[in-house]
Length: 326
Image 1: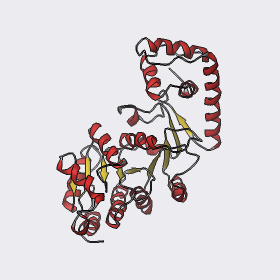
Image 2: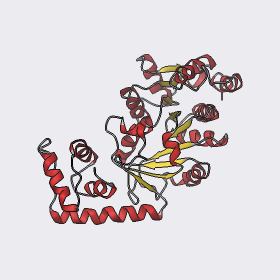
Image 3: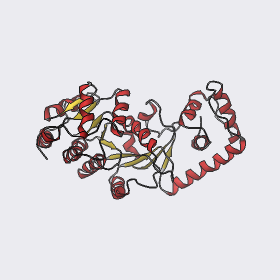
Image 4: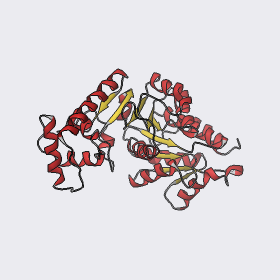
């Protein structure tokens, strides 16, 4: 099997990405004993995939130096580097379509192996109603022992992490850049609070790599991969949240969408919610009964969970948010 340096070396080679590395992992029988043998491994993989680019010896040597630098920089930053050949690689992410071939994590790694986990996401520009509901959704699930997953973006994601932390819950933030920085910068304090309260920051991208637009879409599949279900708080017809919803549907996991009432029902940021519900791709969440049914459905996945983990007190609190104007 390929070790961490081998995988990082391949990823540092020009024109080689995670899908090429995954194809190598799928076909490899004998692990390479030194860097030059990685070229032989790629030549063998090229027999099944003619599009694989074969690096020169010099390119491999340069890539290996880059890989070693990434490991050193990660260690200095307190970042753990995980690859699929290691036992501590999250089992949930081994099973998704297009799985990651490397993960960088900082904080409590046990969050990545939680028995119960749910993603709660939404637009960067929520309505006041959506922001409050994002916070309350995450509070409800955190109180019942779920690890809450989101993206540390502005708006809904920020409210989700804050709601979870407000009840001392554990939350995981999936970032679209290296873990040596936080974007947006105004969430730097929030990221530290996540770490201080036993949560975790996760990324596919090495130390020093800044955010890029397509990284945001790529990380959305990891939010679903680490979760048992998804709740969409608010989304327009286009945007990152709709990508996350698609990954949820593709991975055949439960999807719930907040139903907007009264003055927010026609808002642009609720159009994606209503579309997913009309297409029968999502469960509508508009009142305490809907939330009860959704959480009961989730509880069937967990043998040690009672039929309904949503207490009357928690549901009453949700009723006050979902059914009232804000």
